[in-house]
Length: 266
Ligand SMILES: Nc1nc2c(ncn2[C@@H]2O[C@H](COP(=O)(O)OP(=O)(O)OP(=O)(O)O)[C@@H](O)[C@H]2O)c(=O)[nH]1
Image 1: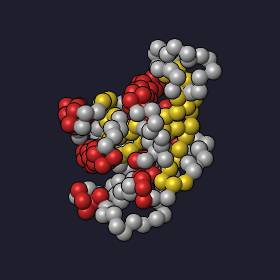
Image 2 (image 1 turned 60 degrees about the vertical axis):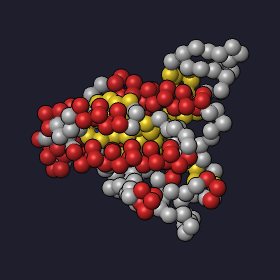
Image 3 (image 1 turned 90 degrees about the vertical axis):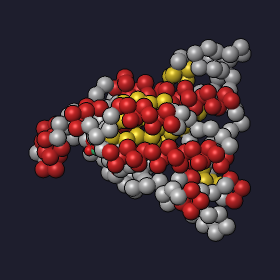
Image 4 (image 1 turned 45 degrees about the vertical axis):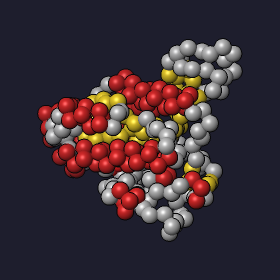
């Protein structure tokens, strides 16, 4: 890289290629990964997403006056980390999301942080992770205190924020830009580190799954020397499943329940 965020290095000019940052959003189902991703990309909160879609979005950002080509992978694991190498070997930084109104999702975020810590240990590299307590607008239904979030983040040495995908865009944007800054710091430390897309379709009988070795959820863990490498897939266009006006929304039965819980639908 010929430039540093905030302070251009000698020799950098308007021709400098943008920094490329891959960011993976991890967390239990329903924590709000898609909502946060969509809020960041479109400034909008959309209340329903297809939980089975996993997409990588691309966005040209400016962070601290520097151009960044940011790719965001909105992951869709089921209940626990699965086939994790698709994001572990691809991302420069991770946003681990839980919902402040769900203790289960908080416990899930702890599993993801453990997974990242193990990955860092195995690869002897560090991977910036930010812990996000989402749905701050639902604070009246809190099951996880802010202090617990701070403590968990402290245990894994990561930044911590409480956010809401349906409140202000600037706060959500700030968090994504912080992730870019963290990734950039790591990239500057080891500029040769290149993200890889790892094929998931080759079983590795000689490699014990991470579960067996560390008692973690069912995530198999391949080393770079033993997997087949593929071209990174083409970045998909943002795939928003539905964009509904609040009027259309209010005619539907299921969302009415969520409205009763205090949802704000824009
Ligand atoms: N009130 C409130 N609801 C939210 C917020 N973020 C997400 N939601 C709602 O929570 C539900 C789950 O959000 P998603 O973004 O689909 O969660 P996810 O983590 O992507 O879940 P999967 O797609 O199942 O992995 C949806 O009904 C969202 O509208 C938030 O900040 N506040």
